[in-house]
Image 1 (cartoon, rainbow, N blue to C red):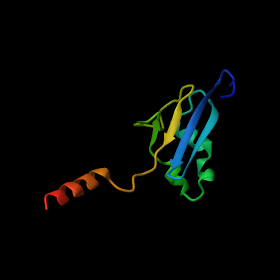
Image 2 (cartoon, helix red, strand yellow):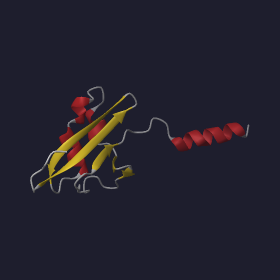
Image 3 (cartoon, rainbow, N blue to C red):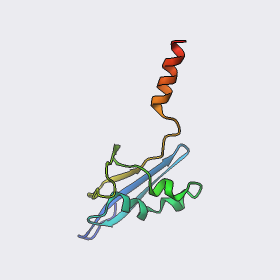
Image 4 (cartoon, rainbow, N blue to C red):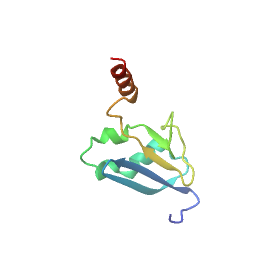
Length: 104
């Protein structure tokens, strides 16, 4: 990571599809939120095949832990914001279907 000025911090924003991933390193102002960092990362331009809202409005996490309020989560030096894709299949529904199939 590059050196930053006293009023900025270095963070990363990560997004992945099954076939490729992208990690963007940003130098942001102290007080930047997780959601703001995602907007600054420009991921929608790197993944034009996806609707921009699927990235900009996605659930977010820090180092594998989902954020309850990404619009209020202030980032710290070295944080990695992860953009989560929506699930295509609900795991609870799949387990319920498997259990039902076993009882038949």
